[in-house]
Length: 463
Image (cartoon, rainbow, N blue to C red; front, top):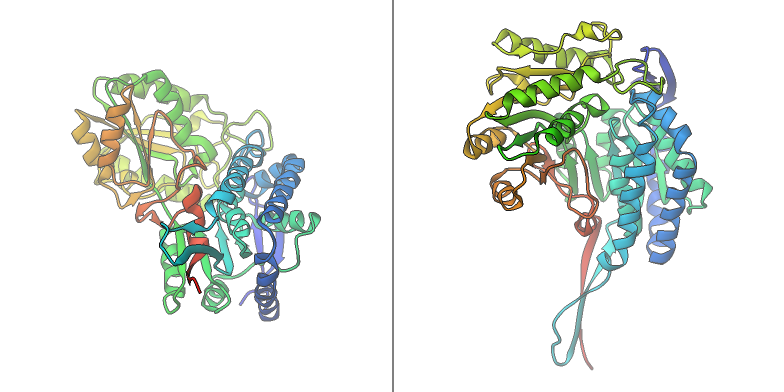
């Protein structure tokens, strides 16, 4: 087994940092410390747990600019957007889960019964292992870390090798605010080491965000244990532009939903179905906006589209585009229009494809790149059929002026979230979940606490 790993910056493919993998002794010490800290933390008042989590948010906000630059260097998001992962999404989700914690974690009463006192108490499940990805490294981690700590659990974080500094920043923040030893820890692990940790009796729950193959590996590792794994996996999220849509707003928001973060978002828009009466107008607008992106070094504050995470990711997406073109699709954006585009690098130009169909991977398999395929449809029925024709089901968006129609169509969609006139966003007041190959489990909202606690019933008969 290799003793260390390297993180290469997608900016220029140079080695940004090198870190050691945890050895067996360090893994054992981490698991033992988390187990030992359980009793102390679960007996800490909820008010004090909330205070600690607020301290984390304050620390992150005070260091958002520096952490944003680190993020840009690690995964390539343009620096003008990177700090907002902390100042907007991270802060919003963390504060919301703190605000709802007292009600979400309180005892559950039962109807009165003469001679008895009965209730159910939510107890912490134990130690939570969080396996976080690189594409939104703080946002995906906060979805579980904050509610897990609020519920009284200890937490161990393992971050993707592309963004190891994010795990280290969590640890630094908790140390700065004086979180008790063992309550939050992190380590860098190989995949076999992750599997071994999941098998350890001291791990009570696993939260994973990543690929379908990764989710299957997590399930296999946990297979002989009676624990739950929350899995947020891939997506191939569709948008449907109805005949009554505000076409101007639809174009702007769908294009942003497809190309922001270089398309590297689980809930980004990857396929679009447009009513045939608006198809030409949508395509013209989308191509114009695509050409307005400025592709280049993400440390330049004028850049709006950075590199993909690594050259291999760009090559994978380009192969899907080439397959579609070979099968009859038409690519409407010449990559050479962008000076920074260079074949074989992580710098991939945005692309809009027409004349696509569901025999092409570009309309069926996750692309995770600034590419979207667009098809005309005759009516709602055809749109719903095509939107559901996917092995994934994370989000779907409907663009219309008719809210009742959006609800009606949303009920027919096989998806975890149905949007109307927006996309690529998590509202922390709503359950974040997927269906089919997009995974299982739930984060955010009051239901985001459910997997992080176990219920204990108190059935007390009066003397």
